[in-house]
Image (cartoon, rainbow, N blue to C red; front, side, top):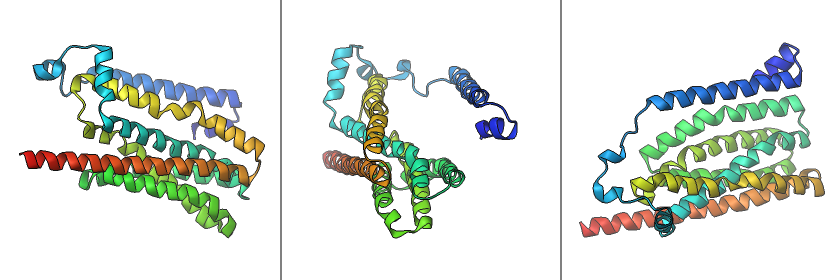
Length: 265
């Protein structure tokens, strides 16, 4: 919106419009950083039980994390969920290739972005009310089905259905992103190495940043038109199914652990 205001309303160059966006993001990050400096951790290491504090040893801590299957399931869920999020970047070009004007495609993708607060807050609320893992499973499955729908729906010549699918995928995507960090609590990770665990999940989970653009570029270049995007969305959908399966397995492991704890109690 800021870029459009600068370039279209004020008549500034593209470079100037981009500068405004960079300045906005930079100022926002600096402001958030200043606020975080003033906040205190809800539970510091001084308040942690001595048996939980332990000694910091990178190799030993990594070995501890490697032995937690739930952590790797969460990593797989983030990895697969991030694939679905990356697919949304291609919606504008895909809609234009389906016969929609650039202005209309931009409007639809902007509406999709406004699903962020609805999906994030709504998904979190449902997760608190029912179960974070269960709601995440539903969101992953529905988003994956929506991705597959993008392959099929253009053949039905229903532009309205295609638009609704794009917005719906956006809604599910932000629900997924609002939930997949909440399930980290199910891994029973020692407090002192939680940061290391998050680092591992982030490195592997956000790895698609390094190769999905290459996959997208290769497929759309060698298979131009709708077929290239169908192949791309097919790949994303397959990964989405893997993420859904990982979430189902995680829920099963968590329930079994809770059952054993209750039986032991």
